[in-house]
Image (cartoon, rainbow, N blue to C red; front, side):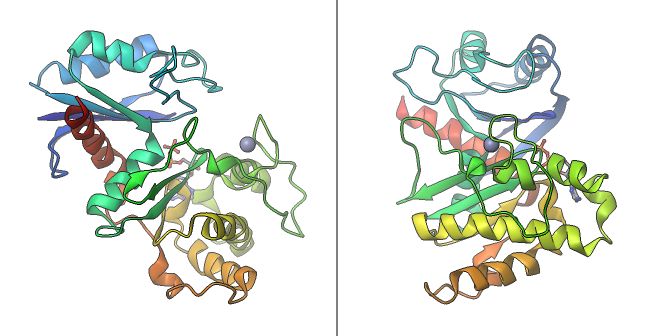
Length: 287
Ligand code: ADP
Ligand code: ZN
């Protein structure tokens, strides 16, 4: 039995399951302060004989094993979680191998193993939710350098009709600052779920996502692109993405049919938690 945590900015999803992606039990815990949230996480997992644990976390996080702060959540604006040693806390409690990566890297692993990119040795998983992040599988492995990639913070060209200043507290009008859920809400004055009828919202959203996808396609050449996260529940964004991306690429690279190349997660909203089970299995194998 394996333990899996999808640590998000609004909620922690905890599950026990196995490396085939089978989930036996799961719960959700609100993300408040670490002292409150982690106590509940520990109470849940204490009920099960877990052999390893995987954590897919909101970031940025320290994934460099040589670093003294390996396993920490680092420069998050979320109060109380900055410099929080989540891996050490779990390790001291459970004494099992702990796999640790970003939430989007976990989801990318899940999708590449059991989801929309099953059988492919490369894919890109992007979430558009409270933030924007992406995880890439390249040659069958998660892409990592001195740290994990931060593809949500790339700069994109502005939509000609967009006067919104942007919401990223680090870069203002990076992709996340212009196109994540909170940016949509502030620009248009209401939450995304309440803007379903406003076609201009989703036209602009598709424009920004296509700007980013062009960069990702040209740099990484992923074999499949998977778009998850709350905002992508608006299916009407997809036609806008296809239209703008086709215009931007202008037939320079030959891609498969865009509706088959850029898709929703095959594992639905379970991509992240199943990915965390796989991170747990990897941690056991590495030991
Ligand atoms: P998180 O990123 O915190 O893990 P989500 O992926 O659900 O969680 O993203 C939350 C963001 O997505 C919020 O800004 C919310 O307004 C937006 N969102 C959630 N569901 C929808 C939806 N059905 N349509 C449009 N926007 C949505
Ligand atoms: Zn940014």
